Image: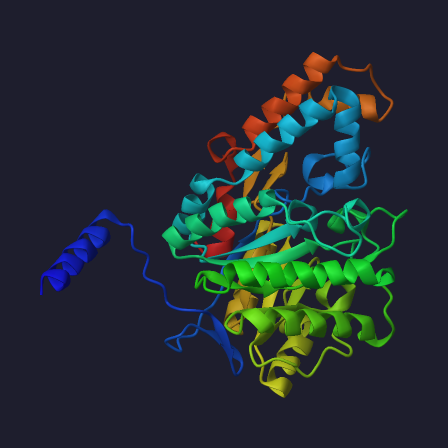
Length: 403
């Protein structure tokens, strides 16, 4: 009896103190719907954390001077040195997404987050492994993900893990996956494929018991010529098998080739807890533009999810969300923050000396001093904080139908 009373008192205390999060249970596919463990339909309304673990140059007005994140880092290093560059990125990663961001997202109406991951925050590239064929696990990516998950739990939001930059790169669009064309692509390298498989198994081992992990988005936007998508199906199937060795509970999200639009050879589903994810950019917001995904859902009795869209006007956003939700399709928007853009959820203020650095890199201006350049990048690392960003209320209103 004493133990019962003690447990009851502790439970009441935890509820009052707000330290307990009551989950709706693991998400799963059930027929054409994504449901929670109560069997309730769950319409995902999400945001992609683009620019955090993976910097695409266009988000930082750097497309004219750098093609990939690796090139951005190389330019910064040449300007301020390796130590200063590492200091900047440490601050940047710690500041770009914080608990304040997640609290605000929940307040605005989001119930899920898609995390675009760069593999190199979790493991070494194959050519830097001390022992060929083995995998060195890095703490940075897992720590960032753990912190993010804790904030999602507190806010009762689902976190979907998305391998946005796979080992070697999954396509020909270099910025999306930070691709080095001098090294073998994912599809040209068995070692890169094995590392991708191992990474997903490691992630599944780490998060298999986490109810607020919404699922695993195996590879973002493959854009590569793959005959019949046979290589894509083979890798997806291998990853699925390894994940299921340790985790039978989480949804596996599958994106088609050609930027998540070509599902040749990727049907029917090969797992009983799978969702097909398509992306939609820059085309009309009519049912005809998504009909093939509705047909796929109907034919194979499997849910579909719109895993990435955005980069347009608020009017387009409003119409697109209405299209998805009318057809019971959850969505995830792109993206959370960019420099000087009001199509993202928030706008990062451009540091005062930033344009001078861009002009120098473009061959249009003098070279900044190390001190000037370092100060500019450290200012950027401060400007990305939630409290220093401009909230684009028009985007929020468009996504959630508020006038």
